Length: 430
Image (cartoon, rainbow, N blue to C red; front, side, top):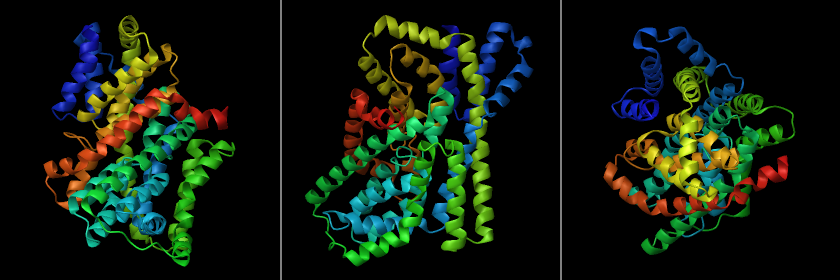
């Protein structure tokens, strides 16, 4: 129990006082080793070996590729093209640009795989367009923040790659399992947009003509093929998820440089530099989590948690609901990526003992952590949108509250009905 307190509670305390995630994981692991072996006998060589081992993974090469794709899409003006496609599809509905906002995020999710990239790139465009059309800033910001969380759900998804690597689960299966929840999520947000729009009397645009729709599709077709290349390539066995990310990156570079010619060499260097910084920070967290996971296994902390839950909870559904609440609580205070590194090695061995598919659990975990991105006090997407709009944080949270309803409804659906989540993986991958 002392080891569990140091490993988990100690880590939470370090994170809450502002210690960077990677250092917090390494420090809490070192404290356990010092507590059990003596602080004068901490195996420093073993700590370095375990941290380096954590990033020695072919699968993790997909992370910088997806980060690069997201930044490239934003810098190349792809966001405008995607937004125009969504506008011609659903812009005529009541509260049209609110629906356009959600659909555009669903389309962009298949390219960036990141909620913050969606909010910071496409989000700025969406909010400006809605404000110019007469929508209140608060409503525009709330819709944008909520729809941005679709980014890591619909594949490709950086959190899915991370979870798959940590849980030793099929990334292809996680990608497939995330598609239906992502679509239901988008539909739920659109229902809430429609309800609010009817109550507030928001405007309706004229339905786009066929030639406008075809023109928008022709402008946005090439970037929207990116997720198709990834999914079809993986499922056909032509390349692995990691190789698919690189192929998709090369494709995006070709259309940005040679087709649209919207990226200069200086822009490319800036994107490369920013991606390298993001990748280094993320891989440092992964290295720290590798040591943390090893210490968890070495001192059988996961076995203690499993034994406790087995003695108190017998029903798998009850366990899933309990863990969803626990993950949501963690997501209120810790960003989604660090939370994945913290919770995956601790909880996956537990759920497998209950016969719960790790792929199903991974989708539920990622979805729950995405809700945390728009929930105070540590809502990364909320702070991103606040920076764009200049709104007060309290005012933004107040406007976002109605959109929690469809998100929690979808969370209950995918938690209680695993067949919905596993439909595509079972159908395609047998």
